[in-house]
Length: 134
Image 1 (tube, rainbow, N blue to C red):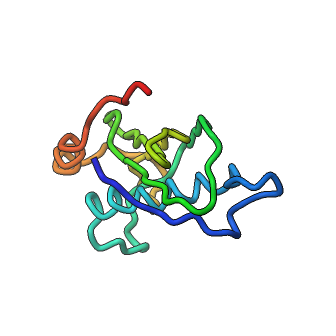
Image 2: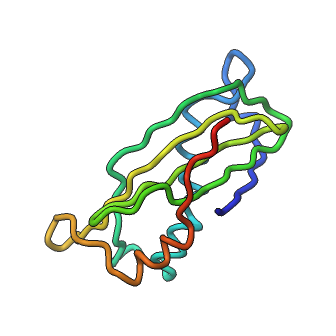
């Protein structure tokens, strides 16, 4: 599991005074950077091997400005051509949001999905775990 700690910015709050729901996809993408570095260490864009096929977020509790948010990130599923990254956002020891992103291994030259290389599958399996029930 990877952990990313973020300090909510005042600009991320909405008229109701809590962190806006549009912020979580960005935070979860930031937390996926550890996965990106794992499977594509150079982070070069000209040979980037993935596309996001789907994101899904459940909002559990309001998230407030003024207290850090920790995002736990892990691999939830590995398929033949895609894998699922799960995120849990925690603030003050409470689960505030959880989400998933399905990443497809992709060949931009041929404009199609392709099998995840075996060496990448082995790297991903080291971070495979089931969701926590909270």
